[in-house]
Amino acid sequence: MIRHEMKFRKDSQKLHKWRTALSQVVNLFGWTASESRYEYELIQRIVEEVVQRLPYDCFLSFSGEDTRYSFTGFLYDALRREGFKAFMDDEGLVTGNEISQALIEAIGKSKLSIVVFSENYGYSTWCLDELAEIIECMETRNQLVCAVFYKVEQSDISNQRKSYGDAMIAHEKRFGKDSEKVLKWRSALSKVANLEGWHIKQNEYDYEFIERIVARLQFLLTVESATREQRSRHVNG
Image (tube, rainbow, N blue to C red; front, side, top):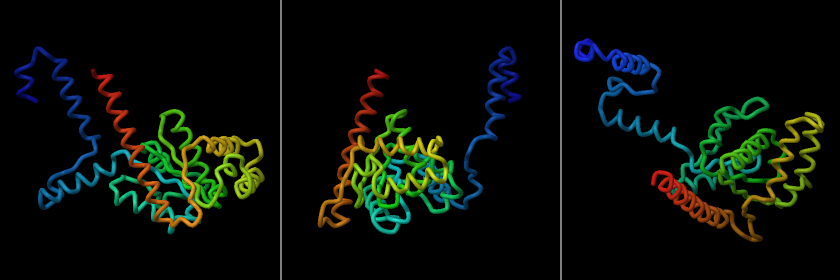
């Protein structure tokens, strides 16, 4: 900077701008070469951490009680094998009575959300919070949202009947019938009727059902990517 001061002493604004930029480097996220013994180790670490910060292709919202170690677990594995960057929450992210900020951010970063509706989904306050956040992203950010109706009927969810009706009655007793939280959940559930979705067919194996879902998601994300690229060309053209 001393050398620059000698060269640009008449341009104090330029020097001040450079000094300010350099002083702000301390607040940047970064990597130090000395932390790794070999350059390839540093490069590998950089790639891994950058990938973790990239937007997700899809966010999976599901009842852990019903499908974490069965259908949703298999769906997540199939998505990963096909090259999707999918987010399936770790049990440690769900604590207390509300979803964590990490889950909210993961939903917002996703191009598409997949909601796996099952028998006990409506009983989970975390699932309902996720659903409300997903519906909000759909309405405010045009996020793609798809639903999987796993051994439940779409109309029972949107009209809140059977297990979903019982679940909402239980939530009303706990939080109050007119509480903002319950009203938000009911509103989110009522909008499920408008979502594109898949129903498992009678006598259909889970793996066949998953293959259908993955194929459709590949199509939807390809179209979404092409639309985004076309929009970008139009703006920049």
